[in-house]
Image (cartoon, protein in one colour):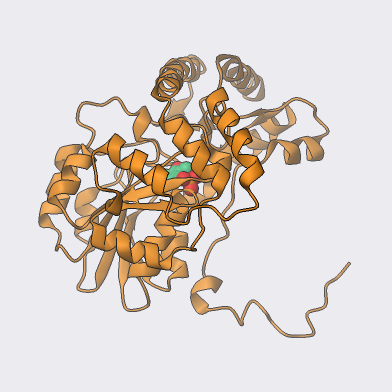
Length: 372
Ligand SMILES: *Cc1c(COP(=O)(O)O)cnc(C)c1O
C-alpha cells in the first residue's frame, strides 16, 4: 500500500531540530528476530540487560499491586524516594524519578537547553545525549574521544560562553570505558558553576575500580553536578522503566516541573522498591557479570579478536571482517548482538554479557561465522 500524504511534506513541517535527529535504534527484540528468521531459540545479548531477570521478590510485589492499578500512581514516588534517600544518604528533595534514566536525561535538556545554549558530549558517547540535545534545539558540541574513552580535557576545551550542560557517561555505552575520580574533579574544578555536569552512572554497580569516581561525595561539594542512575541494568528491571537523578534540590525542582506528572507507573515504583531492598540479588548479578566478563574476554582472545576493555556488562569487539555481515550471520545462527555503526564504530559489534551458557553459545557461533 502506498500512503498518499496529499503532496504535503510532513517531515518538513516538523521543528528543524527534530528533522536533524537520528532515530534511536534499539537491540533487536527476540520475538522480531524469531519472526524474521523462523528460529525458535535465540540468545539475546544486545541490550545490556541483566540475564538473571527480575527476582521473585520483585515479581511477587508487582503481582500484588496489580489490583490497585485502576488508581493513578503516586506522582511524587514518595516511598521510592524515601528508600533511595536512605540508601544513598541524600535528601528526598535531591531526587528526580524518571521513566528510565533516559527520561531524566531528556528532562535535563527540556529544563536547561534551548536554541540559545550549547551542550557538550563525547564522540562514541551514549546516543541519548545527541537525541536530548537535538530535541531541545540546542547546539551539540562533540568532543573527540581518546582511545574510545571520553577525553575530559578535550571536553573542557569546547566550553563556550553559552554552554549549559555537559553529558558524561561513566562507564560509557557502547565502549565500556571509564574515567577516574581525579580526572572528574579536575574537570569540575575548572568549569564555571553555571554549567551542569550530568554524570550518567547507568552501569556503576558493575564497576570495581579503585579510582572510579565517588559521585555521592562530589555531589556535596559541586552544586552543578547531576548524577543519573537506573534500575534497568544491574537491577534487572529494563522492562519497567525506572531511573532517577540525584542533584541539588533546586535543580531537582526544575526537573520535576518539566516531567509528566505520572512518569513512573505504579508497578514500576513497586518493582524498584523491591529491587532496591534486595541488595543480595544485585551482588549475585555483579559476581555473575565478573565471571561472564572473564569468560568472554578469554574467549575473544582465544579467537584472536580485538576488543575494547570494558568495566560494564558488555564488550565492543572488532570481528575483523565486515561487522554488518558478521551481525547478520550471527542472527541466522540465533545470536543477537548489537551493531554500533551509529556510534561511528562501524568496524565493531557490541555483545552483552549473558548467562554462562549464552556466552558459550555466542563464542561458538562467532567462531563458526569467522571460520576460526
Ligand atoms: C542503558 C543506559 C541508560 C539507561 O537507560 P534507562 O533504561 O532509560 O534507564 C543510560 N545511560 C547509558 C549510558 C545506558 O547505556
